[in-house]
Length: 367
Image 1 (tube, helix red, strand yellow):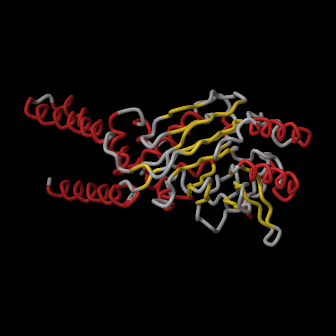
Image 2 (tube, rainbow, N blue to C red):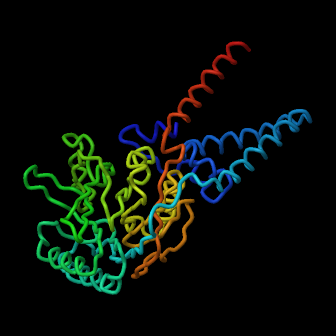
Image 3 (cartoon, rainbow, N blue to C red):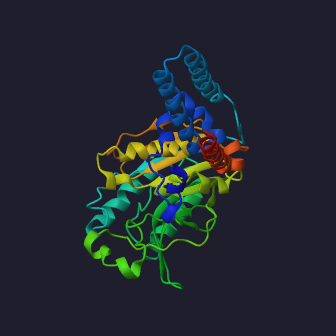
């Protein structure tokens, strides 16, 4: 059911059961089976524990509890398997958390102070190989800031630094608007346009019937187009990186399409919409699971938090507090190779689930 929820009506794979294990032994299975496989093993564990309690027969308990213990020990042991290997030299990266309040973000009078805030923190970090700004860091269209981007590009070329920043892009030829990331640096600007949009947040499904909802919700920038180009790789500081914007990091099966080419994962987000709820922390858990599944480090940069460096084992190595105006500088080691999950995706878990359902059906008929 979680797998179906992950793609039905474009999918909403938030709060899968497997994310509860990101700091527990069963996470060791994530590089093999992905988050759906971990969810399955959580359910299996609960079923085994319940069976031991309900049956109360010594023979059953002596079979079930050792099997349960073995499953969790195996998960803990798998955490230490190096599915991927370091590639090249480590990069110095800076993540800029602008901390612009959501109710101020799109006000025209806020534009200049937003630019000055991001530029001010960037000026202190030109020694970095890569500097990342979050999703829609700049509250204007790319074509409206050409002089600004030209000046930023010249400064980046002088310091041999690549900047990746978020902003909306208007494509005049098609009339489409995109939620985008643009690379500014030594080479010509390169774009990644988000392709997996949030229903009712970034686009309205069945717009002819439901278009009036936009007027009710009053969500700015809520009618983006989905990019037809799903190649989510940009080269930063000479390293191919898999780019995802906000909600896209919830789809592990889409992310693995960029591997093993990409040595680093990048997620740029704006979780300011969630305020002080638990959602930004849930989103961080989701990002950590993607790093663990793929055996790749992730740089996660957000507007109001949680901004963090995540290593290839899914552990947060550095982070900023929420609602803090600050930057975070750290080392990122690109990695090569493929985990089993990168190779076979969700196919194994889906086949296991189908096999279990068929087996249960046959057992029911026989009994």
